[in-house]
Image (cartoon, rainbow, N blue to C red; front, side, top):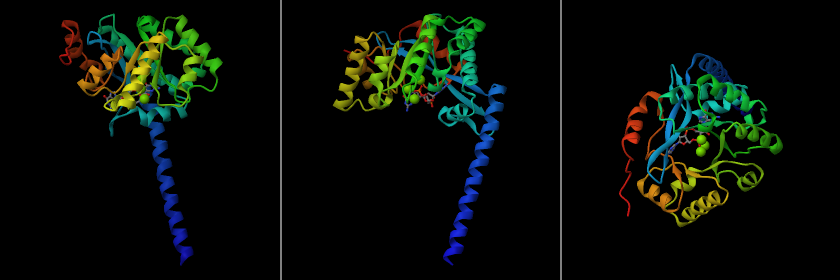
Length: 283
Ligand code: C2E
Ligand code: MG
Ligand code: MG
Ligand code: MG
């Protein structure tokens, strides 16, 4: 009896594994087709300058327009693209489409893209990105490459070389999700970043005195090291005001705008050009 039960649960387990494997295989086939067919595209979220409440630029965030499932978020397919060795192609696709979209933006606006930590092992990264910039006529000085510190880098020397080739070309590098990992400070010592993005977990909990002190200290750290600081995940005007008071330079979050496709930026851009968007009366 016990034996039969065991065999039954094994069979069940086996069937479940099978389904998972088939699902994964389909995801991989679909993803390859999506990349080739232009179904992976950038959405754009505004980055606000807190000083004058104007848009400083946009961050490109990858979306998958799936024929059956609708819009799929990057957390589901970026890791798959990494496993499949497709992350380089994905980055270039996002960059190319973003640069083309940026032709309709005021030239002072920056473009931020995300790269996978894995790509810091690619000694050709800078030249790959630069050839997309040349092809689309986008100035390297407007591009910011964001990289999470998430286990950033096992080979710091290699990463430092990639950093140097990007920065020599005029491309800036931001440390994304700062504070979420465990070795942030050593990364700051070993690699030269141009921007710091405070992880949304600190920003969202800014009603606590501890988080406020941490955000304040990180802003100070950014100032000391000459890196403008961006707060991620700003959802309320109260938090935007608090960040401004702490001297944080930039902010991103649903308060200012959700990530949207390129053709939906017009309204935001028109507002930003006409006058500074007042988020809330201060003082
Ligand atoms: P990230 O670069 O830290 O991007 C911020 C994430 O927070 C985005 O999620 C954004 O939609 C979300 N977000 C922005 N404001 C708010 C807010 O006020 N509240 C909340 N709750 N969330 C907010 P998304 O688009 O799902 O992207 C998740 C992560 O996937 C990104 O984190 C980034 O690490 C990665 N990613 C996105 N696009 C790409 C890409 O093209 N290439 C690579 N390698 N990674 C990408
Ligand atoms: Mg980012
Ligand atoms: Mg982030
Ligand atoms: Mg993130």
